[in-house]
Image (cartoon, rainbow, N blue to C red; front, side):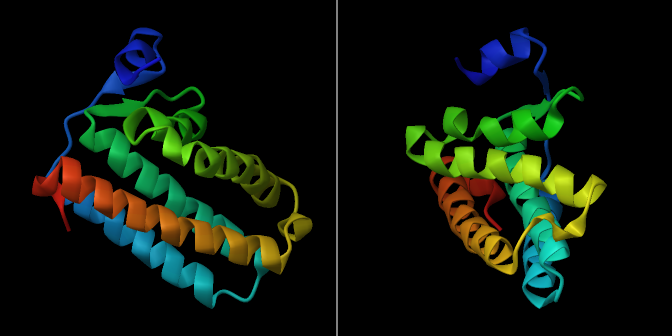
Length: 146
């Protein structure tokens, strides 16, 4: 499948982004990561790092001309990564989708459902995602380069 087919299925809708929107999302992701590194609670570190990942995935989707429809918004935003970047990010996408489920548990059930090592691992993965996103922007849409 591709993004156009996802839109035809109603999973995405067209979106015209702006330099400011992309800049805000990237700056927000950087701030979320900084806050995640500084937090002493494993649960909230995890949530903040997850939010950074979601913002970075949103950047790619928005630059591509789409945004996820309301139904399963986080899932669609994250799982669009391979459609935008390619199969080389499939493993990262699967990991982030797993974190999406865990984030829901942390947020709605108990902040004690994740360990400090899980939170640190997510922070490391989001830092890798950040580098991938910036490289993709520079190669594919340099007009949005921060």
